Length: 454
Image 1 (tube, one colour):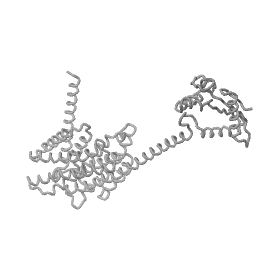
Image 2: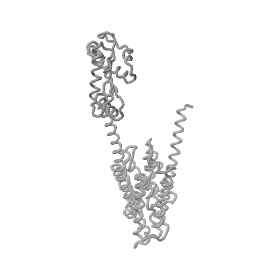
Image 3: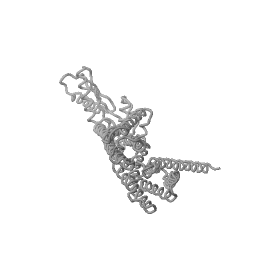
Image 4: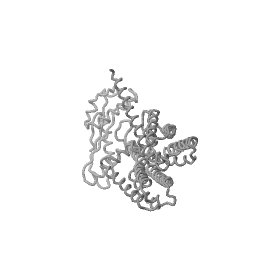
């Protein structure tokens, strides 16, 4: 069997396992949603299944969307069959769920590509438009029309379905996509896991205390801990906190008597679920807005840091251009004057001597006339390299650079040297003039030599 055939079979096996996993996950979450909504028309506070399916599809880099949608459809069918719903209702409502996921995925992914970052305002707005609003709205209206046509149920059923689906999309998708990003996964790194769990535990304790005993106005005291969570953990941390609040709030609203929502004037289950949905929607909106603001501030701070670094690099480059000869790469006259003045002033303070060597290439004008300026430039670069690497005059002679216009038949240099112990008030131009005079003497004395100023 060829290796490629084995890899193909392995890939198919992995795909099959993934599809089975998606079917099982969708079935489990749909069953939880239907079970938690018993007594309220099987409408839960949050519908998790469609949002989880959309998250899996958005994270699938190979874009096997149709297969994953089919797996999600199968999972929804399984969940409805467990509750022994009529077959027409099983297949129709499951199709509505897949329709919602399809609108969400295609509306978001086709425009944003594989890099979906919901901390960016434009991407979040598109996500809200297609995944949170349009997808759940179309699916809910379709389901409401189907139920009205076959069972005569009121069209207001659509209004009951929409908030649960919209909340699911607004909570689950940002959470899963955020956890898939490297900077969010770091929240669960062993070095930060303890703090992350501590913050989530604080949210859980606050939510439990509020939903178990408090009056309705106390519900909004959950907002400060949630916003603190956003500041510390970012969008994914804030959405994860909303999931904790949603789970605890759903439990106390549906399964436990008492708490803030049961004390309303109309304490029916449908009414309590609707109020919980509105409350959770407000929480998610607040978390998202604060997360975007902090993400923009973080990006601005990072951009400012990068700009500052680029400015420093540019300033360093400009400084190099201002002090370095572009042809030879050694210090230019400006840098020479600066260094000489510094050494001169240091020698005045310490009373130590200063020596200056002035060098000139012999018969360089004739060299340019004979060999051309490009060759003259290469000659200067070679001499500059030699002066950096060695201090011996004969090193230039040893290079043997041909020069037919010189009596030595190779390139040579003449050097004038001056040494002084500068005194207070003495000018640095004195040593420059002395070394220049010595250089003139070397040139006049036959070139290819060193003269020392007396």
